[in-house]
View 1: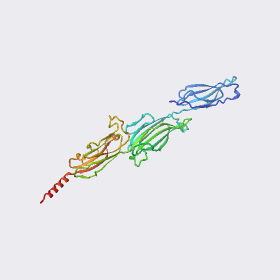
View 2: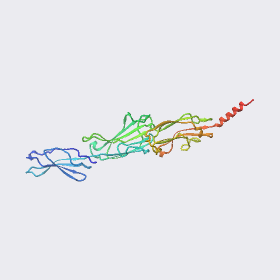
View 3: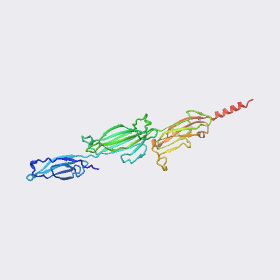
Length: 362
């Protein structure tokens, strides 16, 4: 898209001694890129001139000519102006390991998302500026990176203030930032909960105010965590395992999470038996037939488990794990929690036999 030519003020500096009447004058516009020439007649002694043609990418040369009086047929070049136009074109591509996008990625305001511990990249391409201009507004666009923390309970940005993280002037060129990690003001990297906004602004110039060209965002969600009550590491159960409460916090909005049990000491990557009723699926990937729009914020909830003894029928060492699958690491299982415990019902049985034998004596 070419911009309309800026208003060019040309004053006809005619020498009055040459004029017994208004001289014949005109403005010649020459497109530097195409060589196209267009003459516009001028009347009177001067004033404001608005170009009838747009200024090309390479700029345009304006020349004010006037013809002498009746006894002077010469053509005089009275003034020249070179007007360069700039039409900054900027694209920003944000890449994360999660293919989720809200809005049109080809628009100026789309939203991507990632997890607080995972890297992402930002690629920016700028063109259409005037490389050698001494005017910052023609040579640069302004980049501001702002952060905003979300409410820890609702994951909402409502009434949450924004703060500046970084800013810079960008000239024509390509800029690649990779890998990046969030810069939110969270207590730890993994607890980041908010958004980073990348704003590109065209500087004010030629009576046009500062203008936002692009403003995409990347949402940052905390790393999930899990705890399990009523069980401790290396605990020995000689009777039925009591009911457990599994507390899950900040489960990623695109995830499959569940409890599993397997015999033996813990070994990362072991595929155990899924504990029935503990599986939770969020997001379109894990719910392709879901009629309602899936959640797009993390989930915090609890699960009660009262039948773990059904998965430990034999005595021995067992491991209980909380597993989650997300878009990260190619959706490989990630362990949020594990505990190893022992089931030894023989001790309980021997104790009962011993007690019965003692009770039956003379």
